[in-house]
Length: 255
Ligand code: PEP
View (cartoon, rainbow, N blue to C red):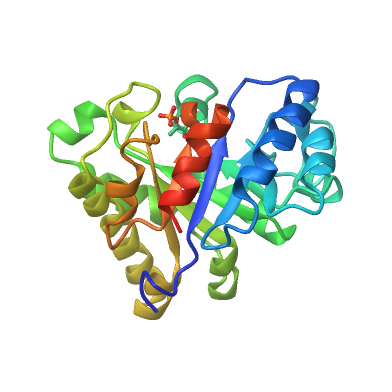
């Protein structure tokens, strides 16, 4: 399997934006703009409170709905948390795990990323697992080591057959929400390190089959160049996923 046969996935990460009413309006506007564009899977990862509206508005369209986080326990005394089973029951198909904002502000660790990943895939969700180096780590020359470490930690105890439900998003921390995009070659190289880690754990065929996205200031202008790279199988998009026109241009670039 190679880029031509791997699944390309364009996923928006709305972060802490949009009310339920805004969600309905956004998807009603986006749906006709991306209708029939099935060269990639199209996903919107939305805040928990927007899920019901998003799932309803996306019915009968080619837009799939994801969440932005998931707890790793099935149920119990975890006030304020949401389980994978709950998300599944609400019609959610994808979930972002280990986003750098969660690592930076909410105490997310490689261990909890791994637990959340296992919980998600065991419940039948597709996990979009985020990895990425800070600028300091890049400047010290640790990018490859760190990306391989984060990838292997996240995939610990994942069964080979569950890899089909895992997407890895390489998101250099210095490129997220900053307007500074990795060059297409940097994105390709980072995604290649992630793929190499998958190969070291699961073998060549698994590494060739796994979808690896790039994320970090991907937008309507730079998407085509980033997505042309052999190791870039789609994008995880923050800011540009909040505008239907920009998001559609990125979907078009992935066709
Ligand atoms: C993200 O939130 O994962 C992201 C990549 O954000 P942005 O596109 O705004 O950099």
